[in-house]
Amino acid sequence: MSPEDIKKLVEDKFPGKLKEGKITGFEPTFILEKDSLLHVCRFLKESKELSFDLVSCMSGADYPDRFEVIYLLFSFSHKHKMSLKVQLPKDNPEVESATTVWRGANWYERETAELYGIKFKNHPDLRPLLLPEDWNEGYPLRKDWTGKDFLKLPELK
Amino acid sequence: MNEQISEIYTEEFFVNMGPQHPSTHGVLRLLLKMDGEVVLDMVPHVGYLHRSMEKIAENRTYYQYIPYTDRIDYVSSMFCNQAFCMAVEKLANVPVPERAEYIRIMMVELNRIASHLIWLGTFSLDLGAITPFLYCFREREKILDLFEMVCGQRMTFNYMRIGGVSRDLTPEFIPAAKEFVNYFLPRVDEYEAILTRNPIFLGRTKGVGLLDQKAAIDHGVTGPSLRGTGLKWDLRKDEPYSIYERFKFEIPVGENSDVWDRYIVRIKEMRESAKIALQAIENLPEGPIKTKIPAVFKPPAGEVYLRIEAPRGEMGFYIVSDGTPKPYRLKIRTGSFSNLTVLPMISRGWKIADLVAIFGSLDVVLPEVDR
Image (cartoon, rainbow over all chains, first blue to last red; front, side, top):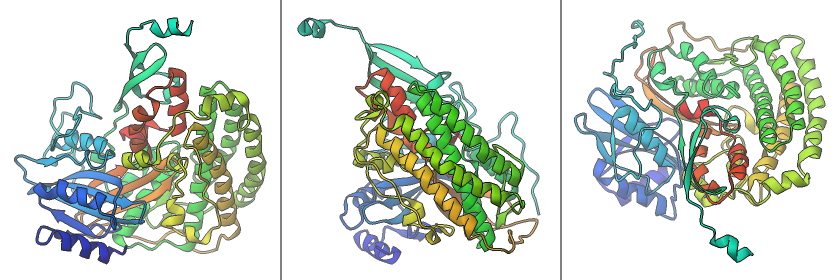
């Protein structure tokens, strides 16, 4: 399916719930409400015309006013792709885990939870993945994080 | 007699395999739940090589980050270079000269051979065959010599640049590369003569570690491990990036999705890579090797995700730019990371000796998992 067809199909299924974003290379991109994430994910995987079966990549991001969780999806049976974004508030970032839909999201969510402090509800196993066992210095990928030896490169003009 | 044996009760116990175990090739710790010799369950522990690559990226300019990409997967640095440079090029719409594209493909395909050779050598070593290891490193040495000719480095190349490559080929490179490809193709037959129909090797690999195709996709397995399950999917062919659509090559696939199939897919891939490299050498055009870009390089604000076919599966870069000289967010997707998550599932119920074969067949490189 072409990006336009996917866009139309998803927008018709969830009218008014989606905003449009842009990730070059993985169009179309949708920005969702966090409550509808699991619902949309299930549809994207189970719908016969779409059947997105691979989480190509999953990532978090920290912006001045929000956190974002980004899902880059691909379908092996139809060879098309798309991306999803969920925006989360700064004070209590919490979202449903997509592990029940794609098992491949498991470690990505563990990583995002550990490095950004985003909680994934109903995740089977949210143990820290990458950082040392005795790590207690917060969430390193947040923009306001400062560690003991952390030096910032001077701003370039 | 058999009845008696089945009545013997053995207590389940836990074994730590790694982080310093010769067959984990790096620092991976597997916590195994064992019943005698049989693996009941396992928990992989990673992170021993975590170097916070993604945090470092936010604090470096785009140029400065290229040498860091070498260290994501030091066995196939050229791919990390290429994926990062292509992602930034896509973000900023930087054109790449024809000659640079050909040189890049030559380099990555030679690197793919070198990477598969390391895998083949260590994999056969794990299974007790020492000779292929020596053969593989003999050939890999020649590839490293070629790389040294071009960029002066043998491991972390730092060769590609945003908009091209850093240096042109030296005059002696082309004849040497041609000679290598012609020398290398018969050598693959040599490895196959030692391993492919060897009864001991077959006993260790045939029917072992079956990976169901659906489960593999669900876990995000890509690359040769996925092609071993019979799925004909290769980004070079199905989603041609760079100039791959101009090259003639086959995509080898397996049939039974066992360890042996993953082995044979990589063996065949080495032959195909050699053919692609040869085509690139023969059709190499003249011209510039790099697009000029400003010293303070500021890609426009935006987001990009770009993936390429690396020896261990999809390698992708997700970059968020805010219009400053440094990336706002950079996420690295690597093949090994997802491929490792499938290990507990496919090694359950196999003996610990088979676990070594199964883990070897996934070709996981740990720095790529931890980043």
